[in-house]
Structures are given as C-alpha cells and as structure tokens.
Length: 347
Image (cartoon, rainbow, N blue to C red):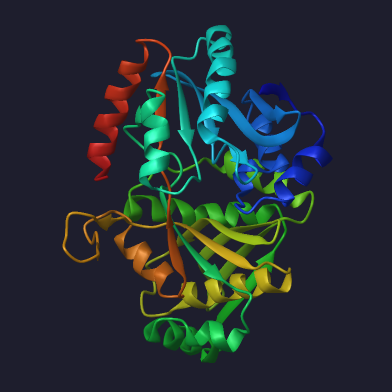
C-alpha cells in the first residue's frame, strides 16, 4: 500500500460519494474549514494500485501537547483489509509526528463497535482515549419515507408537541443562510453550555464553519421564535444525501413552548427537500452495558438531549471508542489532563 496526499477536490469527493458511510467530517469543505481555523492538515489517499481509502489528518496544538487527529476515518472501500491500512497509516504518520513534534495519534473512526474491529486496534497497540472528540454513539433517522410515516414513527409525545407548536400562531421557524444569524445562534448556544456541560466553540469558530459549507449551499441556520424572540436554534449541514444536526441550542425561558420540536421537524423536512435519505442527530448518551436489559444512562450529561433526539424515531449506531496511538512519553501529560477534565464533566 502507498499513502500520498490528494489535492484534487473532485477525486476526493468522488471517492466519498461511492462509500456507504457518510460523514461531513470527511468532506473537502471540512478540510477547508480546518485550514480557515489555522490548523495544518493532510488529505491522505490510501492506494493499492487504485484509490482504496481516504483519511483527513489534522494537527491539534494545545497547552497540554500536540497530537495528530484522524476524524471519522479512515474511510475505505468495502472488503479492504483494515488492519493493513492502519499499519500503513501508522508508518506514514510516524514520520509526520516526528516533524510536527506530535506525541500521539487520535483516531475517531466510524467502524462498527464489535470484537473484530476492537482487536484490530488492540493488536496494533492502540489504547482507549481518555476522552472522545466525536461521539461514539449516534442517532440516525431514515427520512426516505413519506412525512406521514415519519410522524407515525415518532414517540407519541414528540408528535403531539410538534402539532402543538404548529397550531401556535406565536411560534415561527425561520431558515437562514445569512452569516449574521450565526451570531443569533451563538447567543442561544452560550446559554446551552452550562445546561449540557460541554465546552463551547467561540463565535469565530462557528462563523468559519458556516462559511466553509455555505459556499456550496451545504448548511442552514434554523431559528425558532416565540413572540418574535429566538429561543431555539440549530446549524444543520447537508452533504452527500445526509442531513447532520451538528450544532444546536435552546433557551429555557419558555419551557412549555415546544419550539425546539417544530424546529427539528422543519430541519428534517428541509433535508428531505434536498434529497437526503438520512438525518443524523449526532451524539446520544450510552447504554449501560452491565445491565441484564438495555438501559440508557439517565445520569449522563446528554440524557435529556438523548430523550429529545430519540423521540423522533430512528436507530442508533455505535462505533469503536476513540483510540490513541502513543508516539512519545509526552502523551501521558495529555492523558492525565483529559482524564481529570472528563471526570469533572461527568462523562
């Protein structure tokens, strides 16, 4: 196998268009966004005569250390030997790590959580990361069905709240592609931080993300208003037949007004209008695996958000936990800092 950089957008997007797994974190525009943030990245092609896989590697620099991040990859053709691909990537990235003074490689893959895939990472001396950057468990909805069937597949309460919001003349959902509305989203977003216990992105980050995908009409901002006041908002990305609920925010000022439910339904309908077949709600709280029956972790910081997302119907997908490959002993300082941080956040 040979690893070399790809600098042609058509080759990159064309390869991904043929794959089963879809994630905007592999898209060309996500790479453009990372570069707009000032991050160094490598768009790597994996070749075995023909192109058989791709991977975006980002250099992440923080006070606790520098590392390389492989997000939602590698993305491979069906039937490819995953272990051999990872071995080739490690050999290539070991040289990159030396040049960039990176102490480890972090891999957040979309490979199914099963024994075979776990053993691939274990055999190559990866270890479970102390934190995740992207969710290991996500919730998806097949939106190829007619709207009536989608509504019928929802939790009864969710369907009722959507209809209540539709009947309320003081509730309005606005879809926008105006950059200034990123600031409106951010106002609500900042109030969500303490409630769901996560580290917020700054406004400049959100604006750069919006610009990267707006250039090709791949993103929209949804603003949910009650009596003219914005109390709910979302940034949704549309890429290669999938809608992604990537950024969301809501206010608790009017807890009995179900604006967020109608906003999410309007986002799903927009994804359908764009020809999307799947709507990805992003991360949800995990199942407690040591129980005799499947029980969702109600103490998890995302428990309330999970109840909201799963109410729209759909199914979960679980991926291999985020993995780290250690290049140098500098890794352990990063490990300790992240371990403590994760504990304080309740994960």
